[in-house]
Image (tube, rainbow, N blue to C red):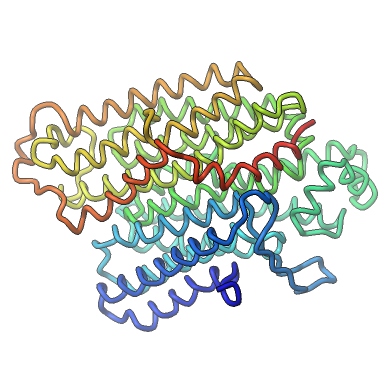
Length: 515
């Protein structure tokens, strides 16, 4: 097995699957979907096999492949995986087949649709494993192209403006990120993430920036802050962090359900992953210098998005703002962990473990909730308003029960997966930045009110007469929810498999970030 299976094969599998779907899907939507599902399940099987080969006690990069590409320009084909990368690979491999399973409504140009889904998966796998910026940036941009067309060609009535807004915002972030990293390359001659992280922690970057960049009257510290600002903006838009989040609600609301599942479950994690892989390790001193501002942005992301979700009447937009809220906890935990010192290693590790758990758990839970809203929208003839329903638990008890567990997981109910990550984040942040943790609890309260309101309006109360004949989940449709909900319950009761996978990686990152 070790002779052929590696990260390159994992990346090429969805690319090959996309080619097969485009060439063999023809005009039959069912065949195209089956071919895409076969490719996605092959990626899942390969990811599980790589997980089995991974040594979680090592903590550093494993499964490394490094070959000269354009060495004179610092460009190498350099891939590897630590606990963070492998966790994101497993999430990608789980959510993609779930999204394909929920794309039953895609009939027009189905081969193109599923080919783009697999192309998006290949971009994600490549971005989560690349360790050289040039190589990584190719995959980062690759994810943008299929996502744009998935919204533009198959979205709702407002798909045109939503797709364009998504493209423009993300492209602006890509440009600032590229310019900042080119500045670092001119100063260091390096594109490899581990080497740039070493230079950033040691302070060597300051000397190299002063020596090789035309800084003029600006101090190296000012230039480094500007470079960090370019990198941070690129990831803040993708995550998203307030106030760079305004593209998200429209994109999530207009995209077809299966595309929204990929956007919220996977693409938003690219922003958080980039902060953990590039921004924090390369710029720890700049993060500490701007710690108060960054904590303020994180708190605003948590609190304002939760209260904005409360004002929504469209269930997709409500979930979109709720998604921003949950990812705000990740930003909060990361920034607080960077502010820690050697004597606060325990709080740092707790916060960072919580961040990684939150990334995985939110990806699973949010994708499932969008699938639930999509199912309701299909059955209700396109209606998805908060006030359009009522009493559905009487006519669709299986749907109400399964999706109710996903809503409670999103709320952070103990015993379900959402609780563990949020608990660890707040455990760490309370010890590192008490004021930020205290203000962020307002977001927890608002989220609870939002979710309980949804449950009351949609599933309880008098049954709306329009839905008396609404059919419950069919046996086939239950496959959309049962595995995901079972995993939410499993990880809520026993998160050890994920914790064991990421803990050594987290300890290394915490040691790197200590001031």
